[in-house]
Image (cartoon, rainbow, N blue to C red):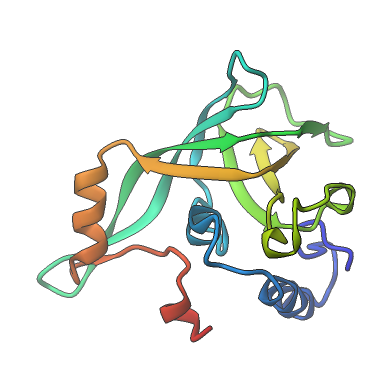
Amino acid sequence: MTFRVRNSDSDDFAKYEKAYYRHLEQFKKSSNTHLWKFFGWDFFHDGAIESIEIQGDLKTVVIRLNCPNVKRFKPDGDYEYVNVGFSCTFRNVSTFTIQYETPDRSWGVRRDLTHFLDAEINTSPMLAGFKALDEDDADHFYSLLMRLLAGDSTIWVELIFSQVDVIADEPTAFALMESDPRFDVPTWSPDKTGK
């Protein structure tokens, strides 16, 4: 298994995408449900990163970002996108790395927002060094590799952690969107995948 967001430099991206989803099938989805719900597919794709904060305990990382991918269907059959803000709180973080890749050529310094592109779950080679506490706790630690875009530069953020909680800025409004057929909320779920 060698992924770095499904080997996007390959001419056969679909092949790597299928291999990545086969990789995800081996993990239990009943624990750490927010990891799968919000990062199993690219729910936050093109969402602006507002902040990344390491808390005082040095084991908690909070990422504030938005999801621009929720569709609200209009009565005429058309739709519009709705931005929804979220806080992702990663707990018991044991590894947090940032790798900044500057392109060979840049067309000027831009102060654009940083955007979330995509992510991979449990693809870090470092994850093998984290032992589960017992046989029933095989999914105790997880890894998440996120690819971000800032101007012309790619930023890789990787975390190894034991829990992530993803909370909408307006939890009640988001829950209503999820239950309302006038909205398409592109989160991962076993119902949508058949698994």
